[in-house]
Length: 272
Ligand code: ADP
Ligand code: MG
Image: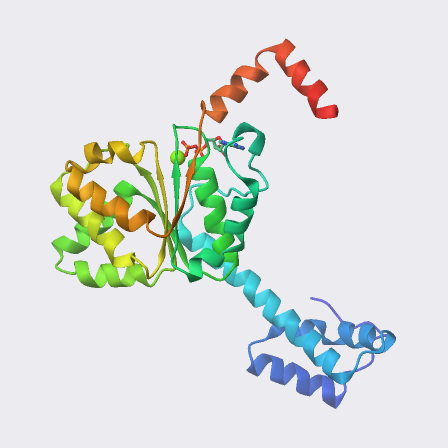
């Protein structure tokens, strides 16, 4: 337990009132920070309005941060990934400026989508997660699951006769990430559920979708070319479609590290 040192003056009436109001407002950071900010404000010649703004900002910033933390935790990402961790030199076809724009999150307000296509290991889940985390920071609710995960959730709701309410509930989430479309083909029921998921969000809320298959092969996944093309239509109508290329980043880098001469070349490169 911290004890009040002899040098600290006893709390004034104002201190007591501030502590009381901060508690009543459930704004504990105001109580933590107002003295420090007052000292700073006096020496920096702040107006009373400047001071009030600074005190309120402490609380709103902390709330935004803890809100983002909760949204990220609730989203179910498989790992934490950021755009900063993404090695763009491994994906020369990906436009950094476009990713930076997407990181800004403006596309979510327009209910646009992002589609990441490419072979396994090329960073689709990485970028989908990074953009999802950026969206959570920007204040959007996010939910991440594999295509199979989303289908399972909808199939369970369907069985219980509450598919519509489940779709409605999901549509209130500003961004859903549907990872790994194409790894497992869908039967007719699953394809229908998936179609309903996509349709229910069309022009209302955003999707990030990843697939190892080009659109031309989606007919194989959904068992029927017409369902696939109706779905692709709705997804790409307002979307950024990004094609990742090449071999698996992990395999490539494991291979490079096990080759001393190549590693030396890379080190030489990175110092220039
Ligand atoms: P995909 O979803 O396309 O199969 P992942 O995004 O899961 O691939 O990538 C596999 C692993 O390699 C992950 O750990 C990911 O962070 C990493 N990775 C892939 N591409 C890159 C990249 N360009 N820069 C940094 N890490 C990458
Ligand atoms: Mg993946």
